[in-house]
Image (cartoon, rainbow, N blue to C red; front, side, top):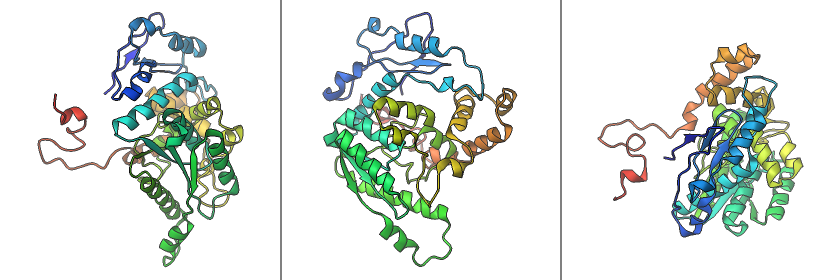
Length: 347
């Protein structure tokens, strides 16, 4: 596991040297790996020399945003250094793809901002010639989504394939009465992911597009849109992901349009959740990253009903964020104490 050291504002951050698993990424592994937000800054750099890792970006981020005070009207704690995040995620995609012995990436491109950021990072990491985008519309999918997916493919240069899923989804439900739309949405998500994994053969890795807000709230389908080989955007709240999207040059129309899975006509993420991503992100940040209790959030002006609702969603959907639990019977059990390459690789 990576080690992290807290960076002090008035000193040079602690750094460590790292070697990539492949000569292809050996040079790029020298890029500084830091994640700076306004409250707590962690640095685990991969600079070849400690002197190369003056925490300029970290320091400037702290100076820029100042001390965090829980405030439902202050979005500054969510501000990030987009340039640094971009470098980290590009390196992450390239390095993990090589570690897996693979060469390509497969991304489900919906026309939304999450998949747009993911596919843009993949193109930068692996080259657009090694990225396959899949647009998998159901009959409720909009022409706007198709247009946005095509616009991204033209802009970034990756191959985009359209694989409709209406026939197989409708065939499955043809003899079933009164199918709840949540079941329909889950089936659509799993059908799409099945296609992505099939098209990843023989040398591709499926990239996840679920952001941190969705993962924490459980707003996604287990083994559907939440399934992936690696997820480069899963530690970015929706608010932060939009910042990265703007930095990457994703068209503003895609960045700012209301998020929707288009499960039915007029459906939107925020309408279904009952609150905005902007409001949820601030609550989640202080609740999860800063570990503040619900009472503390309410004391600082956050809506009590919103805090309770979000906390319950995070708690209730924990199972979606972990691998299926295996009952332990032996000395070394998968998922318990047989976790890392060091557990089986020779010295």
